[in-house]
Image (cartoon, rainbow, N blue to C red; front, side, top):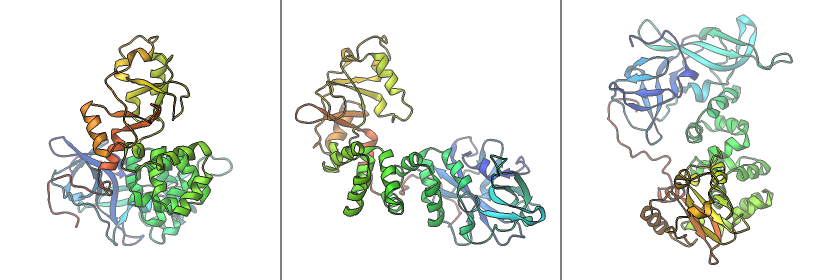
Length: 422
């Protein structure tokens, strides 16, 4: 690595893009794998955990890394695409070292690890050489004082997991997209995962839960106290909450529904009344619904809501009062792409797509897929026998139900093979 910097810090390395020799991005750095032998000898960095396309996590040996600079990592381009599986002798820097409680006896300091620095030794191996430690916040300081010490001067880096908190890992997770954060949480040891779940705020945990495999969702929810579990379910989208509750034991499901706010619980119960593999079972009851007198300006203001999924922001639904599902009669749907070309004062009702017929809640997955494909849509309305809007089914809802149950763990995306981490 002829142009590599003399020292690289792990927290700054995570998230960087990884490129092959011709400049094509092949993934992102998610963690560092090290071999920790003792608190005296600097641990050798074995390689990187990289997330490649399809959310597969693979191992990239440091021998395959040709360059690390300020904003990117370059490799030889020959990577083993088998899923990374941690060995008992290996330690993950982000997953298992960050937030560990340690001490620096020579300085009389006790605190938590918030970063680790690595550098190349004379034999060209990369080793962990520095440890960044933050003292607890005090009465006069909002943030504790920080120290950077040599690896050999820090005690507590090797030992029991009970010495590890979650503060700095939470900070890293909060900077990630929910799907990326979910992937990291999925790979954490059980005790570490429990600490992270306990420290995440309800809204963030709800976002992450929606991206986790079903077995992880159930395991996490069952280890929360009932009050907090109900709060998390309220923060989730109603269709995801309904799917999760359906996977819980009936007694647990009934308890949590009883603890949820009545309005949110009613939405979930309504979705659970439909067969899971139907438009009614897949739909979300929270599309953008407007009255007949709404203008283009009002419609655009609604779809600018930051938390609105892209698929739901592509279309608005004009209905008679009431405007909460089940609404009054559905007047029709209007595409945001069309509204962008109209004066702000134009009525949305005048822009309705008359070719879009609504789905019925009993429509099967194949019927929904055929409908979206035929009309080139990313979302479609679902109505009852009286023409009242019940919700909208989106292409991402459809994919979640069409893909295999363990699709988040499956990695049938191809790649070049080479000798690597077994």
